[in-house]
Length: 198
Image (cartoon, rainbow, N blue to C red; front, side, top):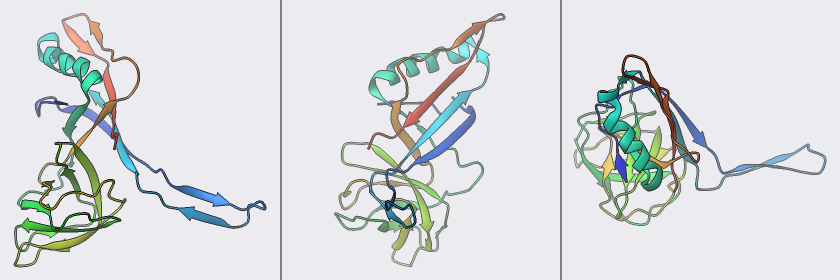
C-alpha cells in the first residue's frame, strides 16, 4: 500500500458514497421496499494542481506503484477541526451494523455529526466512515456513536480509530495512470480516483 505524502495536496477532491443497497419494486411499481446491505463504501476523484517536474516526480512514482499496490491518502477535512480526540480504539469485538462503541478518547471531546473517521484493521487496512449521530465523550473516555453506513467488517477489540486525520484507501480506478508534460518543465493533468475495496 502506497501512502501519499502530506505535501501532495490536491487541487480538488470529489468524494462519493457508493451504496450497494437498493429499492425493489413490485410488478405494478407502486410499492418499493428498501434493501439495505452492508458494503457501502467511499471513493474520491482527486485532481493535483500544476507543478514542476521536480515537484511531481515522487508523486508520479507513487501513482505508478499505487496502481499496482493500492493507494492511501488523507481525507480532506476542509477546515473542520477534529483534532484532540485522544487515542480512540474500538471498544468491544465483533460490532456490527451502524452503532459503534469507542474508548480511549479525550473526555469532553465532541465527536460531532458529520465527522469523518477511518478504522484500521489488524492488517493495516483503513476503512473510511462518516458519523451520523455523534456524542460527547464521557469522563471514562468512552462514547457510542451511529455511523452513516454499515460497518464492513467486525473489527477487533482495540482496533485503532483515526479521527484527527482520517484516510481513504483503495485501488486506483481504471487501467492506466497518465499525466501531461508541458513547456517550462511543468506537469499537469494528474487525476486519479481511489475507491475503497472492502
